[in-house]
Image (cartoon, rainbow, N blue to C red):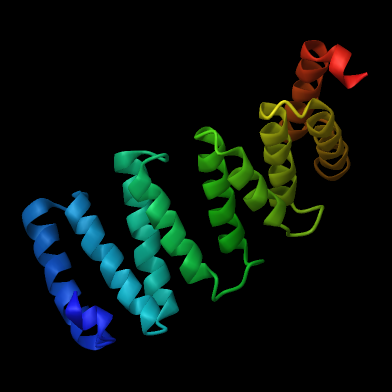
Length: 194
């Protein structure tokens, strides 16, 4: 749109709001064109420095696309990227930013895009004892294991298990999940791990 590319964001915003409202009314709130209009409006908010409004609208678009299109749809990845660019202002270590990065890493992993998943998983840091960090460590171990990097994966999962055991306790489902994974990997790859 010419207004948008010329930096006339207020005028572009007014038009995007009109298009979005009309799309909602005519096509429905979950129609791809309506979601595109909402994404355009969120982008306009971002360009005006209206981070809170951009974030709220981006989250709404992302959640709707996830529900309607599924996690691996290209439009879903676009939504996640838009949300991540909004969160960049909040900071790389903000919990919402880290959650977005983790979701994107999971999507990459499901698509077999191991290198991209690995890069995002390595970036997520809340402190070693935070439950989300433990989840990242576990996810990263699975990424390594899927790449046939068994020794690295096993060592990382073992570290995750020990931390979960210490922080969450032996009976916690996440601790048990790590233990089960270690047992399974040990059985599957005993020659490679020794």
